[in-house]
Image (cartoon, rainbow, N blue to C red; front, side):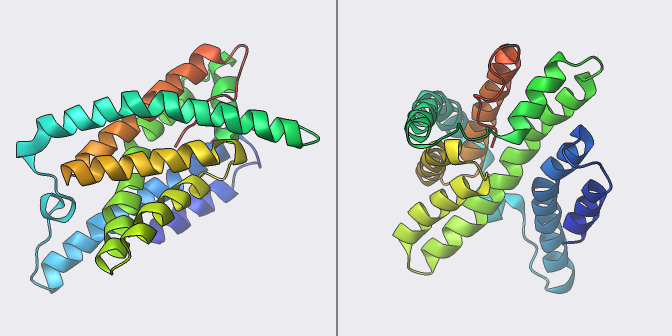
Length: 230
């Protein structure tokens, strides 16, 4: 919460809609999750005499790295075309029903603008790092590492699966990507269940975001908001 307050307060000091404010907003949740988890582990070890490691907590077993790579990268390859099809289908339906086209993700638009702007390289590097490294780790710890197993262990496996997948879709606050990202949430749960290791969905999530960042940069001159950054 301290990290959330500090970074959130920093974001408030920037002009609304500015690249700096967007950068601070992007950093808020993933960094807060990571700091909270690390703090929890340190406090447990120090005051409760129950040292908790990432390996034990999230199944980060080194002996399963090859399996995680196979499911993570292979899953990412399968997820991407299905998610993009669902986004295009959603876009078609919404455009057919709505009087005007809905806005794309603001972050996607900012990345596309910075790709064309002079001196925007440092922001692109930051966004790429947050999207491909920090966001997958932070979001997988929250959704697949904490929420999903907690609800499942309390006797609600279906709520755990579909509830956390829907929350994952809603978390990104965009109508056009809701269905596709809900599917991604379901796929990441499947990968996590198959491997019993959080590393696998982290890799799939990172691969998915990396491909989307690349597509946004390549399409920035003509189609700035067709990607799905998680």
